[in-house]
Image 1 (cartoon, each protein chain N blue to C red):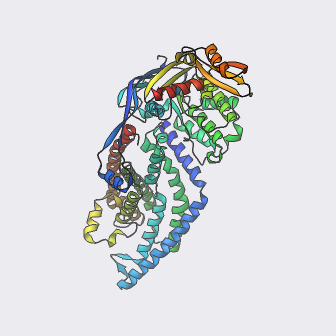
Image 2 (spheres, one colour; image 1 turned 180 degrees about the horizontal axis):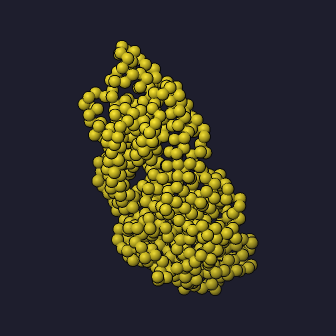
Image 3 (cartoon, rainbow over the protein chains, first blue to last red; image 1 turned 60 degrees about the vertical axis):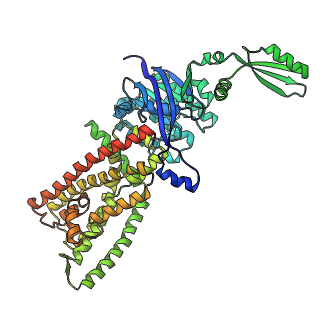
Length: 314
Length: 270
């Protein structure tokens, strides 16, 4: 068994969508319309993911992240290209593939709404045929990572969003899958819950060597969890490398902060390939008196924003 | 063995889940009383206007027993697959079902089974006991009960398959309400749940013989009430055979249709 858990080769996905027209007349026309347009959600994406990695899979809204993940889980069939997940073609063996993956899709829950969490766990244990010993070990591991007691006997419908997300992540790891897909797991959570969830994901990844593919818009998640990130935009892969490389790859950016006469801070992101810090300061000094300066490494968030915005204008 | 563990887990969860809705069961029983009162007065009027004791070979008594038990079976078999599936498709929830480690149809069937078990004990059995006490022996209590259970389980499978044949249609039409109403009406009418099949005009009655719907209500009730020679093996086996045949035919069709429908989700994202 190789260490490659996911292999995608030149994968594309197109959707056929009816061209909708406006108004009553348009709606009636749509009834008989054969006017379809093709939406290219993912185009020619190739990537490999190795065992035990946590990949940050990033991109602006509508870039094709979820579509890629759905193809890896087997609920969507690629229009072109090949996907192998643990040596299987997901959409051809969806059920077999399902035994080896765990998924958390944003605000969707796989838990039984009306049952206490422990019943959902028991049920998952049975339908994934988890041996009793492994199951108890896993619960033990969970207890060491999070405070399980307050939620274990609570029906899912009575949980807060944070508790439910936490529960869903635990449920996704319960049958010890080789790979777990987390689609925006921290969306809508408060800072302390986000921190808890990041710790949990890292803990499970370390102990169980589970491969994690994480999509998120929260750069805090990326900084805390991912060594490697993949960025896609408009369906195409535009970056696939270490997170350290990211900052230098798109120019070496730094943030210059200057305190002016009126004690206000001015911020400027500087691409050191095009200009340098001294130049900017000189320009500034012609107009203002600078009382203080700070030089900061650019945050991941700013780099990503630059990339998204750059792609837009390009 | 391992397979049974999966299936039983789903049944068990279904039982626990539906037990949480005690009030729902009570409301359902109350609703039945109103419906049965309506049925009672309607058929009383029909019998009175006919001027004879028996109509189409059934006394008023026979008809009432038949219809009350049909209602009880209706409560037992009722599934909301058409609704549930269309809601799951619209909300995208269906993905979570498709990613369970077992085939979707199997998963759905066993997810509902717990509710069936509950309905059997909470809705069907009380009605059955009440009817047999009130009518003092109009329902034979013997080996027919065992055959009825067999027939009932077959009816359940046929009914599930009818639902699973109709539900994916909403993937193509994007409307659910109308489809569900049509399905409900057709099944209830042509299965003999609202009007005993004996009352159908000859031509329609002949036609219904060749349709799957009577396997849901008419056959189990006939077996339970020992009508039409079902108290002998020679009379019983063909009936169960018809049910079994429909189970197989509809399962195969349902499977093919579902596999085609699920392509629509996997190819075009629903």
